[in-house]
Length: 379
Image (cartoon, rainbow, N blue to C red; front, side, top):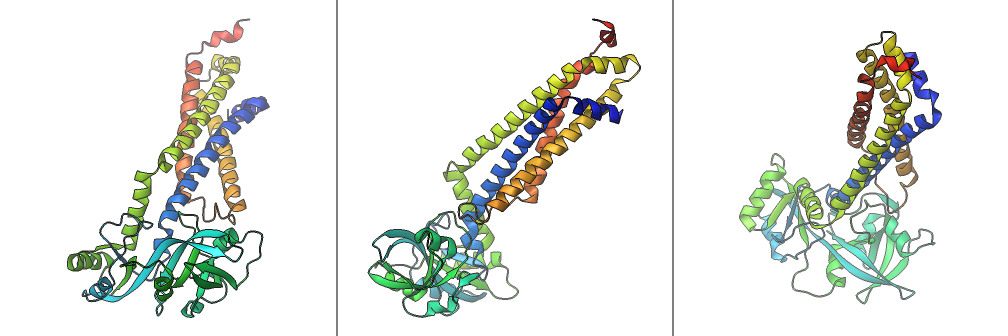
Protein backbone atom coordinates (compact mmCIF):
# COMPACT_ATOMS: atom_id res chain seq x y z
CA UNK A 1 0.00 0.00 0.00
CA UNK A 2 2.89 2.36 0.72
CA UNK A 3 4.33 1.73 -2.74
CA UNK A 4 0.97 2.45 -4.36
CA UNK A 5 0.58 5.68 -2.36
CA UNK A 6 4.01 6.89 -3.47
CA UNK A 7 3.36 5.95 -7.11
CA UNK A 8 0.04 7.85 -7.05
CA UNK A 9 1.77 10.89 -5.57
CA UNK A 10 4.56 10.92 -8.15
CA UNK A 11 2.23 10.02 -11.01
CA UNK A 12 1.28 13.63 -11.72
CA UNK A 13 4.49 15.62 -11.60
CA UNK A 14 2.82 19.03 -11.96
CA UNK A 15 0.50 18.56 -8.99
CA UNK A 16 3.27 17.00 -6.93
CA UNK A 17 5.48 20.03 -7.56
CA UNK A 18 2.51 22.30 -6.78
CA UNK A 19 2.12 20.64 -3.38
CA UNK A 20 5.85 20.95 -2.69
CA UNK A 21 5.82 24.61 -3.76
CA UNK A 22 2.93 25.48 -1.43
CA UNK A 23 4.60 23.97 1.62
CA UNK A 24 8.03 25.38 0.68
CA UNK A 25 6.66 28.90 0.22
CA UNK A 26 4.80 28.84 3.53
CA UNK A 27 7.87 27.48 5.35
CA UNK A 28 10.21 30.04 3.79
CA UNK A 29 7.96 33.00 4.53
CA UNK A 30 7.24 32.02 8.11
CA UNK A 31 10.81 31.04 9.03
CA UNK A 32 12.40 34.07 7.39
CA UNK A 33 10.01 36.68 8.75
CA UNK A 34 9.96 35.27 12.28
CA UNK A 35 13.77 35.10 12.31
CA UNK A 36 14.08 38.70 11.07
CA UNK A 37 11.56 39.83 13.69
CA UNK A 38 13.53 38.09 16.46
CA UNK A 39 16.73 39.62 15.10
CA UNK A 40 15.27 43.12 15.17
CA UNK A 41 14.06 42.68 18.74
CA UNK A 42 17.47 41.35 19.75
CA UNK A 43 19.06 44.48 18.28
CA UNK A 44 16.91 46.54 20.64
CA UNK A 45 18.75 45.00 23.59
CA UNK A 46 22.16 44.34 22.00
CA UNK A 47 23.72 47.46 23.54
CA UNK A 48 22.71 46.15 26.97
CA UNK A 49 23.93 42.59 26.57
CA UNK A 50 27.21 43.79 25.05
CA UNK A 51 28.09 45.34 28.43
CA UNK A 52 28.74 41.97 30.00
CA UNK A 53 30.93 43.25 32.85
CA UNK A 54 28.10 44.87 34.82
CA UNK A 55 25.14 43.32 36.60
CA UNK A 56 22.84 46.32 37.07
CA UNK A 57 21.98 49.43 35.04
CA UNK A 58 21.03 52.50 37.08
CA UNK A 59 19.12 55.30 35.38
CA UNK A 60 16.56 58.05 35.80
CA UNK A 61 13.10 56.70 36.80
CA UNK A 62 11.62 58.14 33.57
CA UNK A 63 13.78 56.01 31.26
CA UNK A 64 11.66 53.42 29.40
CA UNK A 65 14.21 51.84 27.03
CA UNK A 66 17.88 51.94 26.14
CA UNK A 67 17.65 54.70 23.51
CA UNK A 68 15.68 57.04 25.79
CA UNK A 69 18.20 58.86 27.95
CA UNK A 70 17.44 61.14 30.90
CA UNK A 71 20.76 62.47 32.23
CA UNK A 72 21.66 61.87 35.87
CA UNK A 73 23.40 64.22 38.29
CA UNK A 74 27.10 63.46 38.79
CA UNK A 75 26.49 63.04 42.52
CA UNK A 76 24.33 59.98 41.80
CA UNK A 77 27.49 58.03 40.94
CA UNK A 78 28.73 58.54 44.50
CA UNK A 79 25.31 57.70 45.91
CA UNK A 80 25.24 54.40 44.01
CA UNK A 81 28.78 53.51 45.06
CA UNK A 82 27.79 54.00 48.71
CA UNK A 83 25.03 51.35 48.55
CA UNK A 84 26.02 48.17 50.45
CA UNK A 85 26.70 45.27 48.08
CA UNK A 86 28.14 47.36 45.24
CA UNK A 87 31.55 46.06 44.16
CA UNK A 88 32.09 48.92 41.73
CA UNK A 89 30.08 51.50 39.81
CA UNK A 90 31.21 53.46 36.74
CA UNK A 91 29.62 56.18 34.60
CA UNK A 92 28.39 55.44 31.08
CA UNK A 93 27.43 57.94 28.39
CA UNK A 94 25.14 57.21 25.43
CA UNK A 95 23.59 59.68 23.03
CA UNK A 96 23.08 60.77 19.43
CA UNK A 97 25.29 63.46 17.96
CA UNK A 98 26.43 64.65 14.52
CA UNK A 99 29.98 64.46 13.25
CA UNK A 100 31.55 66.29 10.31
CA UNK A 101 34.10 64.68 8.01
CA UNK A 102 36.99 66.46 6.30
CA UNK A 103 34.96 66.77 3.09
CA UNK A 104 32.29 68.76 4.92
CA UNK A 105 29.63 66.06 4.97
CA UNK A 106 27.86 65.31 8.24
CA UNK A 107 26.77 62.02 9.75
CA UNK A 108 24.75 61.25 12.85
CA UNK A 109 26.37 58.71 15.17
CA UNK A 110 25.67 56.98 18.46
CA UNK A 111 28.28 58.36 20.83
CA UNK A 112 29.33 55.99 23.62
CA UNK A 113 31.50 57.20 26.48
CA UNK A 114 33.13 54.51 28.64
CA UNK A 115 34.93 54.82 31.96
CA UNK A 116 38.50 55.98 31.39
CA UNK A 117 40.04 53.56 33.92
CA UNK A 118 38.05 50.33 33.73
CA UNK A 119 36.90 50.69 30.09
CA UNK A 120 33.63 48.97 31.07
CA UNK A 121 31.21 49.06 28.15
CA UNK A 122 33.84 49.10 25.41
CA UNK A 123 33.33 46.99 22.29
CA UNK A 124 35.28 43.74 22.99
CA UNK A 125 35.90 42.56 19.39
CA UNK A 126 38.68 44.48 17.72
CA UNK A 127 39.21 44.65 13.95
CA UNK A 128 42.03 47.19 13.77
CA UNK A 129 43.96 48.99 16.49
CA UNK A 130 43.75 48.69 20.28
CA UNK A 131 40.84 49.71 22.50
CA UNK A 132 43.26 51.19 25.07
CA UNK A 133 43.96 53.97 22.59
CA UNK A 134 40.80 55.68 23.90
CA UNK A 135 42.79 56.75 26.94
CA UNK A 136 44.68 59.15 24.68
CA UNK A 137 43.34 62.65 23.98
CA UNK A 138 41.25 63.11 20.83
CA UNK A 139 41.13 59.35 20.19
CA UNK A 140 37.95 57.53 19.11
CA UNK A 141 36.93 54.05 18.00
CA UNK A 142 34.23 53.27 15.42
CA UNK A 143 32.44 50.02 14.64
CA UNK A 144 33.22 48.34 11.32
CA UNK A 145 29.75 48.69 9.79
CA UNK A 146 29.63 52.32 10.89
CA UNK A 147 32.97 53.00 9.20
CA UNK A 148 31.71 51.46 5.95
CA UNK A 149 28.51 53.49 6.22
CA UNK A 150 30.39 56.73 6.90
CA UNK A 151 33.10 56.24 4.29
CA UNK A 152 31.57 54.00 1.61
CA UNK A 153 33.83 52.50 -1.05
CA UNK A 154 36.89 53.15 1.10
CA UNK A 155 39.01 50.42 2.73
CA UNK A 156 39.17 50.16 6.51
CA UNK A 157 41.90 52.45 7.74
CA UNK A 158 42.96 54.19 10.93
CA UNK A 159 43.64 57.89 11.22
CA UNK A 160 40.39 59.26 9.79
CA UNK A 161 39.76 62.72 11.22
CA UNK A 162 36.28 63.89 12.23
CA UNK A 163 34.93 67.02 13.87
CA UNK A 164 32.41 66.85 16.66
CA UNK A 165 31.00 70.01 18.20
CA UNK A 166 34.13 71.99 17.20
CA UNK A 167 36.40 69.28 18.62
CA UNK A 168 38.79 67.20 16.52
CA UNK A 169 38.79 63.42 16.92
CA UNK A 170 40.87 60.75 15.20
CA UNK A 171 39.47 57.27 14.52
CA UNK A 172 42.34 55.29 16.04
CA UNK A 173 40.65 51.87 16.30
CA UNK A 174 37.93 49.88 14.57
CA UNK A 175 35.83 47.21 16.28
CA UNK A 176 33.08 44.76 15.41
CA UNK A 177 30.06 45.68 17.52
CA UNK A 178 26.66 44.05 17.65
CA UNK A 179 24.11 45.80 15.47
CA UNK A 180 21.76 48.07 17.39
CA UNK A 181 18.14 48.93 16.66
CA UNK A 182 19.25 52.34 15.40
CA UNK A 183 21.35 52.06 12.25
CA UNK A 184 23.69 54.96 13.06
CA UNK A 185 27.43 54.23 13.41
CA UNK A 186 28.81 53.61 16.90
CA UNK A 187 31.56 55.99 17.99
CA UNK A 188 33.38 55.06 21.23
CA UNK A 189 35.34 57.60 23.28
CA UNK A 190 36.45 57.81 26.89
CA UNK A 191 33.91 59.18 29.35
CA UNK A 192 36.10 62.22 30.02
CA UNK A 193 36.28 62.93 26.28
CA UNK A 194 32.50 62.52 25.95
CA UNK A 195 31.98 65.11 28.72
CA UNK A 196 34.34 67.49 26.95
CA UNK A 197 33.02 67.25 23.37
CA UNK A 198 29.26 67.05 23.95
CA UNK A 199 27.17 70.24 24.14
CA UNK A 200 27.22 71.84 27.59
CA UNK A 201 24.32 71.08 29.91
CA UNK A 202 23.81 70.73 33.63
CA UNK A 203 23.66 66.90 33.70
CA UNK A 204 25.29 64.55 31.19
CA UNK A 205 25.73 61.11 32.75
CA UNK A 206 23.36 58.69 30.97
CA UNK A 207 23.69 55.56 33.12
CA UNK A 208 25.62 54.07 36.00
CA UNK A 209 26.91 50.54 35.45
CA UNK A 210 27.14 48.49 38.63
CA UNK A 211 28.81 45.20 39.58
CA UNK A 212 27.47 43.24 42.53
CA UNK A 213 29.73 41.91 45.26
CA UNK A 214 30.19 38.11 45.41
CA UNK A 215 27.23 36.38 47.03
CA UNK A 216 24.73 39.15 46.20
CA UNK A 217 22.30 38.62 43.34
CA UNK A 218 21.80 41.28 40.72
CA UNK A 219 18.06 41.45 41.41
CA UNK A 220 18.59 42.01 45.15
CA UNK A 221 21.20 44.68 44.48
CA UNK A 222 18.92 46.46 42.02
CA UNK A 223 16.16 46.58 44.65
CA UNK A 224 18.61 47.85 47.24
CA UNK A 225 19.88 50.62 44.94
CA UNK A 226 16.33 51.71 44.12
CA UNK A 227 15.30 51.79 47.79
CA UNK A 228 18.42 53.74 48.79
CA UNK A 229 18.78 56.27 45.97
CA UNK A 230 15.28 56.45 44.45
CA UNK A 231 16.76 55.80 41.01
CA UNK A 232 15.58 53.13 38.63
CA UNK A 233 17.86 50.09 38.84
CA UNK A 234 17.39 47.09 36.56
CA UNK A 235 19.36 43.94 35.93
CA UNK A 236 20.74 43.45 32.43
CA UNK A 237 17.98 41.02 31.53
CA UNK A 238 15.19 43.16 33.00
CA UNK A 239 16.42 46.26 31.18
CA UNK A 240 16.74 44.34 27.92
CA UNK A 241 13.18 43.03 28.12
CA UNK A 242 11.84 46.45 29.10
CA UNK A 243 13.44 47.87 25.95
CA UNK A 244 12.00 45.06 23.81
CA UNK A 245 8.51 45.52 25.27
CA UNK A 246 8.69 49.25 24.60
CA UNK A 247 9.41 48.64 20.89
CA UNK A 248 6.66 46.02 20.72
CA UNK A 249 4.10 48.33 22.27
CA UNK A 250 5.06 51.64 20.66
CA UNK A 251 5.87 50.69 17.04
CA UNK A 252 4.11 48.97 14.15
CA UNK A 253 6.82 46.31 13.80
CA UNK A 254 4.87 43.44 15.45
CA UNK A 255 1.73 44.19 13.42
CA UNK A 256 3.58 44.36 10.10
CA UNK A 257 5.52 41.16 10.68
CA UNK A 258 2.41 39.46 12.05
CA UNK A 259 0.46 40.30 8.89
CA UNK A 260 3.26 38.94 6.69
CA UNK A 261 3.50 35.70 8.67
CA UNK A 262 -0.29 35.32 8.71
CA UNK A 263 -0.45 35.81 4.94
CA UNK A 264 2.28 33.20 4.52
CA UNK A 265 0.28 30.69 6.52
CA UNK A 266 -2.96 31.48 4.68
CA UNK A 267 -1.39 31.36 1.20
CA UNK A 268 0.54 28.21 1.97
CA UNK A 269 -2.52 26.52 3.42
CA UNK A 270 -4.70 27.60 0.50
CA UNK A 271 -2.25 26.35 -2.15
CA UNK A 272 -1.64 23.08 -0.32
CA UNK A 273 -5.31 22.41 0.45
CA UNK A 274 -6.47 23.23 -3.07
CA UNK A 275 -3.79 21.12 -4.73
CA UNK A 276 -4.42 18.19 -2.40
CA UNK A 277 -8.14 18.47 -3.07
CA UNK A 278 -7.61 18.45 -6.84
CA UNK A 279 -5.19 15.53 -6.44
CA UNK A 280 -7.77 13.52 -4.51
CA UNK A 281 -10.61 14.40 -6.89
CA UNK A 282 -8.62 13.33 -9.94
CA UNK A 283 -7.71 10.04 -8.27
CA UNK A 284 -11.21 9.17 -7.07
CA UNK A 285 -11.45 6.23 -9.48
CA UNK A 286 -8.22 4.79 -8.15
CA UNK A 287 -9.45 5.14 -4.57
CA UNK A 288 -12.79 3.62 -5.58
CA UNK A 289 -11.05 0.67 -7.20
CA UNK A 290 -9.10 0.04 -4.02
CA UNK A 291 -12.28 0.24 -1.95
CA UNK A 292 -13.96 -2.19 -4.37
CA UNK A 293 -11.27 -4.81 -3.73
CA UNK A 294 -11.61 -4.47 0.03
CA UNK A 295 -9.32 -1.63 1.06
CA UNK A 296 -10.78 0.00 4.17
CA UNK A 297 -11.08 3.68 4.95
CA UNK A 298 -8.39 3.25 7.62
CA UNK A 299 -5.96 1.90 5.03
CA UNK A 300 -6.81 4.72 2.65
CA UNK A 301 -6.24 7.18 5.47
CA UNK A 302 -2.78 5.75 6.11
CA UNK A 303 -1.99 5.98 2.40
CA UNK A 304 -2.98 9.62 2.16
CA UNK A 305 -1.21 10.44 5.43
CA UNK A 306 1.96 8.91 3.98
CA UNK A 307 1.59 11.13 0.92
CA UNK A 308 1.08 14.12 3.20
CA UNK A 309 4.17 13.31 5.26
CA UNK A 310 6.28 13.05 2.09
CA UNK A 311 5.01 16.39 0.77
CA UNK A 312 5.28 18.18 4.13
CA UNK A 313 8.77 16.84 4.89
CA UNK A 314 10.07 17.70 1.41
CA UNK A 315 8.54 21.19 1.36
CA UNK A 316 9.60 21.92 4.94
CA UNK A 317 13.16 20.81 4.26
CA UNK A 318 13.41 22.93 1.13
CA UNK A 319 11.88 25.98 2.86
CA UNK A 320 14.16 25.75 5.90
CA UNK A 321 17.15 25.15 3.65
CA UNK A 322 16.37 28.23 1.56
CA UNK A 323 15.94 30.29 4.74
CA UNK A 324 19.30 29.14 6.07
CA UNK A 325 20.95 29.93 2.73
CA UNK A 326 19.42 33.41 2.80
CA UNK A 327 20.88 34.22 6.22
CA UNK A 328 24.21 32.65 5.29
CA UNK A 329 24.41 34.75 2.11
CA UNK A 330 23.49 37.98 3.91
CA UNK A 331 25.38 37.52 7.19
CA UNK A 332 28.00 40.13 6.29
CA UNK A 333 25.54 42.81 5.17
CA UNK A 334 24.97 45.56 7.78
CA UNK A 335 21.20 45.41 7.30
CA UNK A 336 21.00 41.68 8.17
CA UNK A 337 24.11 41.15 10.29
CA UNK A 338 23.37 39.00 13.32
CA UNK A 339 20.13 37.57 11.95
CA UNK A 340 20.13 33.78 12.32
CA UNK A 341 17.70 30.90 12.04
CA UNK A 342 16.95 29.79 15.61
CA UNK A 343 16.08 26.18 16.36
CA UNK A 344 12.97 27.39 18.18
CA UNK A 345 11.81 28.98 14.92
CA UNK A 346 12.44 25.73 13.05
CA UNK A 347 10.40 23.83 15.62
CA UNK A 348 7.53 26.31 15.55
CA UNK A 349 7.40 26.35 11.75
CA UNK A 350 7.43 22.53 11.74
CA UNK A 351 4.37 22.50 13.98
CA UNK A 352 2.63 25.08 11.76
CA UNK A 353 3.42 23.17 8.55
CA UNK A 354 2.21 19.92 10.13
CA UNK A 355 -1.06 21.61 11.09
CA UNK A 356 -1.48 23.07 7.56
CA UNK A 357 -0.81 19.71 5.94
CA UNK A 358 -3.14 17.88 8.33
CA UNK A 359 -5.93 20.38 7.68
CA UNK A 360 -5.40 20.06 3.94
CA UNK A 361 -5.64 16.28 3.96
CA UNK A 362 -8.65 16.16 6.30
CA UNK A 363 -10.43 18.62 4.02
CA UNK A 364 -9.74 16.35 1.04
CA UNK A 365 -10.44 12.99 2.66
CA UNK A 366 -14.14 13.61 3.09
CA UNK A 367 -14.64 12.78 -0.58
CA UNK A 368 -12.69 9.55 -0.21
CA UNK A 369 -14.55 8.31 2.86
CA UNK A 370 -17.96 9.01 1.24
CA UNK A 371 -16.88 7.47 -2.04
CA UNK A 372 -19.09 4.73 -3.51
CA UNK A 373 -16.89 1.87 -4.81
CA UNK A 374 -19.39 1.32 -7.64
CA UNK A 375 -18.12 4.49 -9.30
CA UNK A 376 -15.28 2.46 -10.78
CA UNK A 377 -17.80 0.47 -12.88
CA UNK A 378 -19.54 3.56 -14.28
CA UNK A 379 -18.61 5.19 -17.51
